[in-house]
Amino acid sequence: RKATAAGVPVRVMLARIDREARVGATGAWSASGDDGAPLARGGALERWRVERSARRLRLVRDDGQATAWADSPIIIRTADADAFPIWNEKRYRGELALSASDSGVTVVNRLPLESYLRGVVALEMGDRPATDMAALEAQAVAARSYAVARLRATGERAWDLGVTVSDQVYGGVDAERALANAAVAATEGEMLTYAGRVVSA
Image 1 (tube, one colour):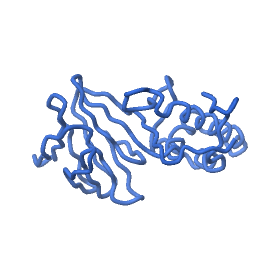
Image 2 (tube, helix red, strand yellow; image 1 turned 90 degrees about the horizontal axis):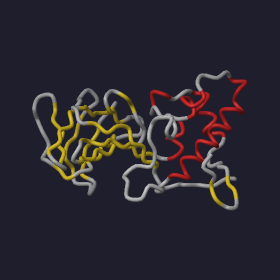
Image 3 (tube, helix red, strand yellow; image 1 turned 45 degrees about the vertical axis):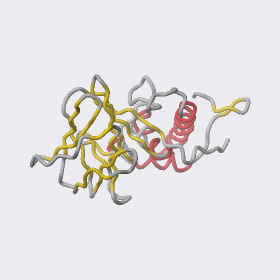
Image 4 (spheres, helix red, strand yellow; image 1 turned 135 degrees about the vertical axis):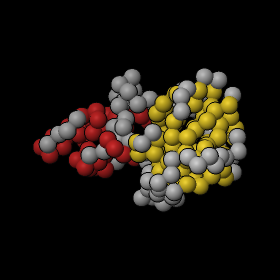
């Protein structure tokens, strides 16, 4: 069945850390509070480390320039569609949301459903020849159904899915492959349903 989850971003927890980590982007980027208040701007070659104090965060550039401490989350967005946010040297579509807790920093990738699937199908299926396109398309439909069944199904939690086999393996832009991307595009919006509900495939 063709359906849509347009306008509802998938929220993927990339990491929960208690050590130093670094953010940046492949092009111009900005950091803001969740309310949109600007905190910092960076260029493609800049990496800023994330620091936590209790439940507040700030970003610190290599030369020591730091943002003000901010209530989390801090949102990292790129300035144009051809650039990608970077978390610990891995590229992701959409935006990154950094949140502080008593135990560390949680990093969540928020992005459109179809963009998310591009980072899933290739990893779930591995490298496949063009003759396996039907299998890749079936995986795309199953992965889409699984993701939609979990959107906002986690109560107050700030993320829907993880990045391992406990949900679906997800690797962001660096995991994408042309054939898997084609399978996602060919099945756009298609999901498995039963009795009017999306199946957790």
